[in-house]
Length: 133
Image (tube, rainbow, N blue to C red; front, top):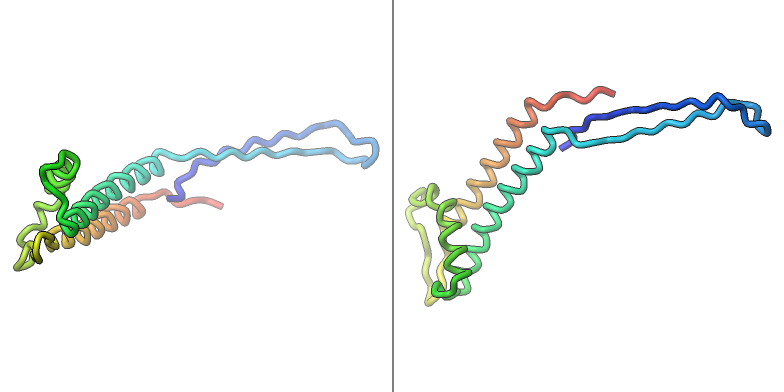
């Protein structure tokens, strides 16, 4: 994420320092993020949030969190939106052991969303303007 717009401001002072006998020049360089960097940061946040929700879902299912709890139910419902496209890719969607279960579809979804994020960032970087030195 090296999108940057560089703005250089150079000031030259015409005063001569009496002790040294030469002109003094100062240079200020300021950087600000370009719109492309802001888009990358926003997408990074969104993909991180999606993957984080799915990982939280996996953990809650492994510890057999009670679905009657509002927070647990909320996390299950929201994360299901992002896991649903990956259901059925493998032969089993979940592996149960006692009260806890491993949501295999959610594990596949984490990998899938990670790969999707890599593709999106790859495409964005292809169209990134080259920096000039």
